[in-house]
Length: 335
Image (tube, rainbow, N blue to C red; front, side, top):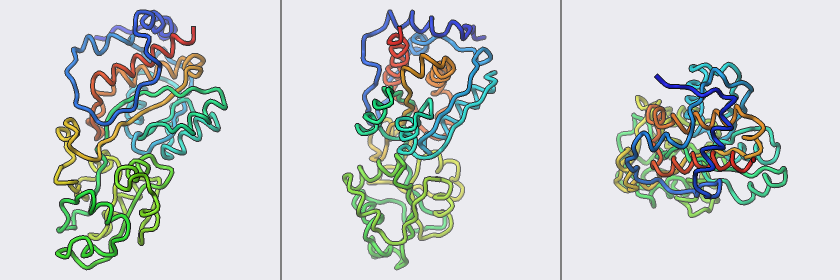
C-alpha cells in the first residue's frame, strides 16, 4: 500500500530532493521519439515524493493540444478518483491556441502540446513574466487513416502522402491502379500542433500546398476528422494515434514507407511520423499554486501506467526522469 506524504509538505520534500539533484536547466530538450531504456522502479520513482490527492485543494486549469487531451483527461480522472476534490479544467483547443492562452492571456496553469513551444511563444510568455518549463510525457505515432470501406490504400510513401494532401485530384492520380475518384481530405486546423508537425515533416514547413488543396476540411476537433474519414471510402485524414485506436472498428491505419505505426516501430524510430508529447507550466505558477505542482508530480509519476491504454507510447525512461528533475529544479528556483 502506498504511503502518502501530506501535500502541505510537498513543496518542502521537493526542495530537499532538488538540493541533492543535478543543476540542469529546468527545461528538457525536445527530442524525437526514442527507444525506451529499462530502469528500475526504485530509480524511476526516487526523484519525486508521493502525493495524496485527498490532501490537494485548489482548482487547476489546462488547455491546448487535442492530441494530449485524452492523456491529460485520463490523468485528471485518476487524480480525482484517488481523492482530489476540486476542479481540473481541460480544454481541447490546439497547441497554438493553448500557448496563446498560457503565454498571452495568462489564463491557464498548464499548456498541453503536441509540438515544442516556439521562440515567439516564449517571448510572449516572457512579456507576462512566465518562463515555460517543458515536461515530456510520452510519444505519439501520428495516424494517417482511411475508412474501413477503403480496399485500395494500405501504404503510402512520404512523397505520395504529400501528393495526397496537396495537388492530387483523384486517387488515380496517386496510383493509376486506384479509383478515379476525388480525394476527400481531413486535416487538423492551423492552431493544431498536429498540423504544424505534419507540415514540417511532410512539406518541409511549407503550409501552402496543404492549405491550397481541393476538398480539404480543417478542424481543431479530432472527432470531426474521424467522422469525416469514416463517412467515405475516398476520404483520408490524420490525427493522434489515440483517436485511431478509439475508432479502430471503422478506420484503417495506413503504413508509411511500408512501416506500420506500432509500439516496436515507434521505439526503434523507424516509423517516420512519431513525435513527442508535452505539458508545460511555469515556476511562478508552481510556487504559487501547490495544487499544480502536485498534479504535475502525479502526472509524471503515473503517466506510464495510463499512456498505452489511452493509445500513445511511453517516453524514453531517461527523458521522463529528466521531466521529473525539471519539476524539482522549478521548485528549487523558487527558494
